[in-house]
Length: 480
Image 1: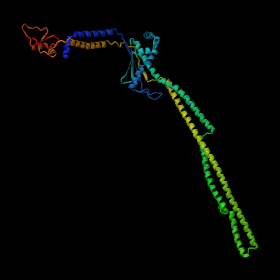
Image 2: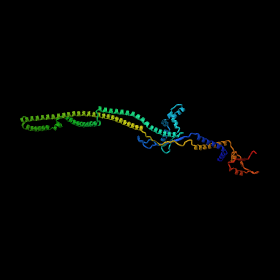
Image 3: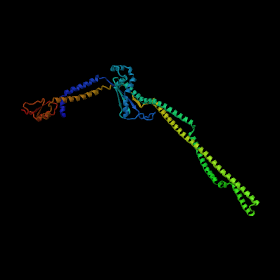
Image 4: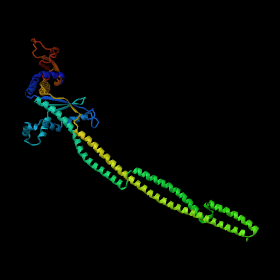
């Protein structure tokens, strides 16, 4: 079917189209007249996501499509609707009687009322900004504006509650943790104080340094004494082997003087022996003097040797005493080191407990501020006012839609009717649809002279330009 054929069919069956369009427009007018008028009130809120949070320091919320979608879900949530029900005190209004009639008192009134209020709610975000429009549609314009404004207020309160309620719950948690941390801190302090008191630790670092200095001094003294003891021990060993030849005896001035006197007397004795003989009284006297000097030398040498042995004994005793004192000091330093290490561990435990306790106190302070804050990133931008014009039904739009739908239905109905009742309406239908050769076309209502004949060319020129006329196709009858 060509477009020209469709136009001819539509013109031929124009009555059907007129009836359908008339019915559609009448239905639209009836709907406009009988449908209740509804009014839509709109309020707007803006989400401030750029200003920093005065408590946490960061932004109040991330900007983005997901964040805007989350806020829209919060606005349309049952929690916000329940808060609106409570704000309007609908439980004390005739609205409760309607709930009882619909549900026979079954279920929760607040949930039912919240769902009923959500039916007229519409939330739309702005495309290129952080503004959200909250619209409410109702048959009462004042009620619509009241609901829109209350949804804005409820949304603001719910947003604040979603922020402060977790902070309040955190306060309870951190209060318990703070008590435990405080007790651990007190236990650590008591343990450290008890340990310092039992071990007489006032200033561990200074005391340890003093005792270490004493130990170093004793170590130096002990090294010196051991060197001295080794020397006296060596000289004592020489005394045991040959006491008169040791350096102490040789270097003794008394012994040296006596030995000098002995040498002179021995030289004189030899001279007198050769001169007077051995039995001369002077020789005998000289021998007695020499014996006396030798005795003195022996006594002085013995005394010097004994002093070396005594010095060695004293040195050994002093070395042993210093060694014992050094060992005692070393044990004391080691004990102080262990005490210092233990005290350091206890000090670190106390400092760790103090750090944990301080951190919990800081977190409690922050949570307390968050739980008491009245700051949100939601700010009312415009308030809803009672509309003066109805938002529905839209009479002009309904009529236009009725005309459009009626036209579509008309075309479909006419095409279906034509398919069920096919007729020859144009000369081309004869040759194309019937398959017969076309001999001529005679217009409807044409006046012909008696005895005149219509030619195909003349009929075509007269018939084809007027597609709206009824035509009659004359075809060759092959059965004649």
